[in-house]
Image (cartoon, rainbow, N blue to C red; front, top):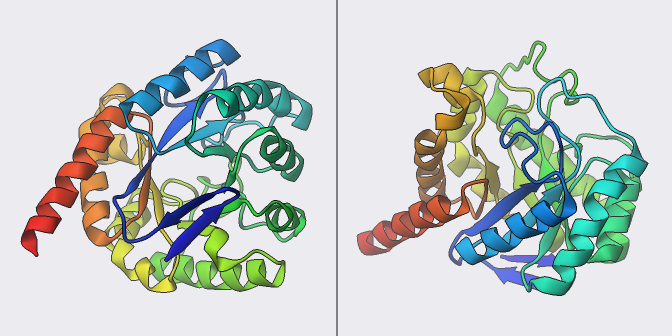
Length: 279
């Protein structure tokens, strides 16, 4: 199984990829705007590469529940200097975390090679035409609703079956739009239009999504469902995040999105070593 993202190519099975998060926002739920200025964002990205990140994911708009959208111009102002600087400094692929097709296009021109799209549930094909034209990698994330509405009343008859059906439909739609299957990764969208129980059901069923023939990306890092389940403070979610990560790797997840890259790399590699010893 191949993943192609512009000039980059990953062949699976291989060690799970770790995607390091760089939030160029003043209002991120996870890091309080610590990387809002371009210099700070670039420094954080370089540190994550040193810690073992295989991909750097740059985002300029918060998608936490209820977050207010920002303008296209403001998002571009935040992310483009960071992507341009990183493209000159690192050899790892750069991902742009955005809902906006124009931001995706500009980021890909600036040096990104992958689009991490929480809005993959859209009906408009503009984003997909850009992905096809540029040969970029594309993360199809499942979300019910929008960041503004997704946590109001998430409802499913069978969340695992419905997310699986969404992936099947999106893969067909993307191929019709000219996006090759090799360009696509899938993400079940933990916390995006899901209750605590929905999140747990998806985590327990990750192996069921490995039959779609595409790499799976999982984003559980520092998410609020951990506190809802365990009562931990927002800054104390790393141990539970790593537990989810290890179980995800065992279930066949191919990539994990992480704020705490060094700890995540250790957890992933140890899990892989144990799984290898089973054989």
